[in-house]
Image (cartoon, rainbow, N blue to C red):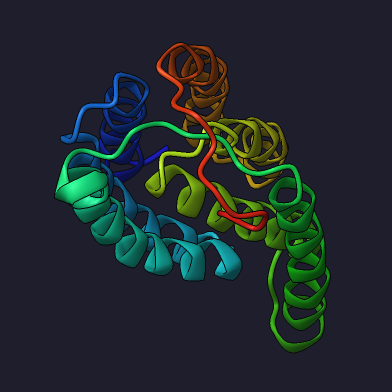
Length: 193
């Protein structure tokens, strides 16, 4: 446990708590957490997580903009659901990305737990994109990621981070039910993401 890991944990908890409440300040708070975790995961040789957090910076900026201006007539974006086709498509995309990234990390780097690391990375990217778009199902992906991540971080002796993901799991479950109460009708189009 390091000071930087504790600071990142505090920012992470604050970010997810604000996200559950649909508070726009979740995005800048999350960006601080993400930058700190880039360093933490690099030190732990969890390279897929490093790459993931670099992408999180971009998705964080996008989410911040979308939540402010992504609704009708550039208003605040509402919570909506994925279409019936989109959810299984995202699952297949996540599994394919896990296989490809896991194989690459396993054969080309000294990555620890390459396939588990790849799975948390692939499904986190999907969850983060769907969260940025305010899709209810983003929380289902986060729940799956949190369960996997807890095991990965315990295996790497990142106990504070593992505890953080335990709290994230509880918050993700809360987020699902909170967002479901503010749900808007599903958008048109069979493959809407």
